[in-house]
Amino acid sequence: MKDFRNRLSISDQVAEQLLDAVISGEISPGERLIETKLARQFRIGQSTLREALQQLEHKGIVTKYPNRATFVTELTEKAVEEIYSVRSQLEPFAGSLGCKRMSDVDYAKLANFLGEMEGSSQNRNFRALMKCDHAFHQHIWKLSGNSTLEKALEFTCAPLFAFYLVRFTYFVDAPAAIMQDFAKDLQDHCKLLTALKSGNPELAEHVFRDVISVFRARHLRHIGEIGRGKARFDGQPISPQEIRSPS
Figure 1 (cartoon, rainbow, N blue to C red):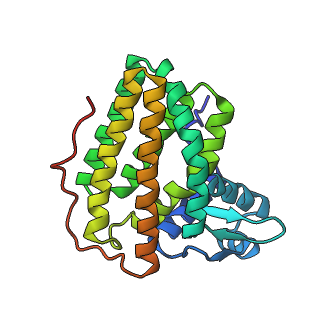
Figure 2 (spheres, rainbow, N blue to C red):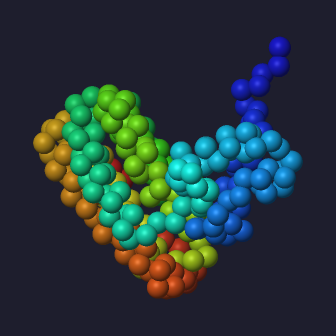
Figure 3 (cartoon, one colour):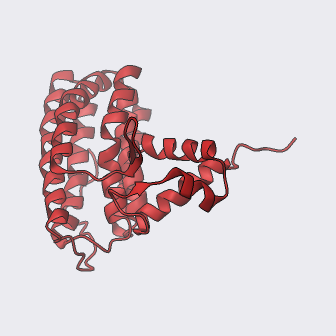
């Protein structure tokens, strides 16, 4: 019997191609996606295309409005503020729950994600970096043991990860200051892991709340940089000097 587990469905393949088109800039943030046109372009039925678009919607790459068309997600400062007003309430709660359930295996897995993030930043592989970043947070959400909380955080935070994936994957459009922020971001993730390891729910919730407020300010600054047209890479790699392994 043939093993189909590793074979992508047609909708999976279309979703990957559309994601690549968005990341490469072929399709721009804020651009409307016309289903009939895309279906003809890919030579597929509209139902298959809708399945692909649904996958991208779950990842925060596209946004579908009721009784309207689907657009490539374009975050504004207002949208980021709204997202963080929810995230700042939910994720500290997830951290407080997760720290009571975290095992040595969970710690090792989270630490491994941070190690992969560091390696990806040094190799300038931003797509892999964001994938590990997202996986790090997803594991914490799952560790909470609350499936409703986990789903709410996934839905809430998906556009944030999508923003960086779309804007910076190829390292052609960000200033040195943003590069340095990526290194600081890894240090902040180490703080989250240390708080989880403490086994103290109150401490974990406090640290998560503080770190998420830093993420919020950083994210808003990056949105502003792009909005003012200042996001230009200077070709300098991320400096790993200040990045510490979790302890």
